[in-house]
Image (cartoon, rainbow, N blue to C red):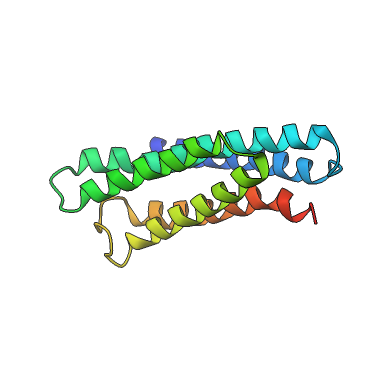
Length: 151
């Protein structure tokens, strides 16, 4: 395992652990508390950053494989995820967390789309696409978790 892969893995675990802690902590705050609204806003802001970071990796993959057909689509999709993340910064926290959960699910579908060849195959290593899709599903679930606890 290379140093880069180890560092990526440590960063993903650290981001996931911190985000998990924050999501679970928010679910314990009473629904009527103003503190809950502020905490949900912070969670949405961090989730928007993480969605942009997750999707942005394909900018690097695209730049390193610029001659491969279909790379432009991946770069356009990355820009689309940035727009989604930026949009959520202007939304009500509950709406933002819902949109971000859907954004992470959409990114997981994009990751899986690289495996059967719907999108440029071999653009990213297979371990990355599978790992990123799993991570996206986990992060999307954490975005939605505080909303489930509202009911």
